[in-house]
Image (cartoon, rainbow, N blue to C red; front, top):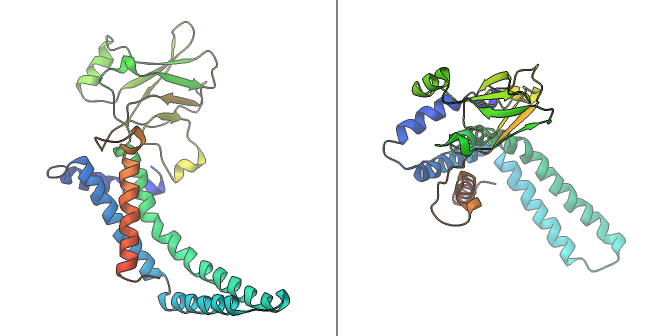
Length: 251
């Protein structure tokens, strides 16, 4: 589990309870609204609103002075410099609060990508897999006729991916602990963003397995890219954040 995965169990618990009265579409809308409120509230608390308002006001005055100037370029340069200085000052003031305020959203995005991204298939035989690099090793689902695999499915255990050589000898067996489309060896950045599906053993002959799992659709209309969780969540998040900023006059 990575640093940004720490709140994931809480998110899953809340989402599970919300599923008793809300559809996946409505739950995504609620997650987006809550994320907008928390992030904009944090930004408002962490940012010096009075100082931002003062810098904005001076930047407007500098822009007006430049627009009203009618002379040689040499005389306009001090006004241009002042306008640029104030713009950069404003960026410097808001950058750190904006980054800190976005961290809760990042945690939610990491969790949503697993919870609403893909699902286990009803027919594993229809799901293709690819291994990288291709070194005479293939990936396959554990044979459902195998007694151990059948018992695992009966007990709701995760499906098993087997790495086999050209002679179909099993080299490794890896449980797919979550419905994600990529399995890989553990990397340094997994300390920040863990792979909920687990990892390929470090001594395995492959570095990555790509899995064509079916995607979840949360909207029943529009093109494929519009039906995913990303479109709905990000659209509601953007609209809600702008509305909060305007209504509460956040600088």
